[in-house]
Image (tube, rainbow, N blue to C red):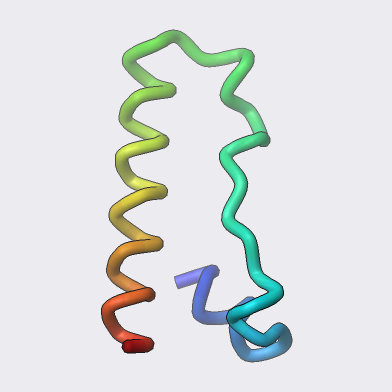
Amino acid sequence: TQIKLLLEVLPKEQLWINPDCGLKTRGWSETKEALINMVKAVKQVRNELS
């Protein structure tokens, strides 16, 4: 995942996942789905790191 690629160059304590890009131009259903996917990806990486 892109999160894992970022962790190759940044310590996990310095990496923040931010839903800022592109959400203002989407409808609510697209925005909700994007946020759900982002949270799933973050949880997956956190579980793998623990």
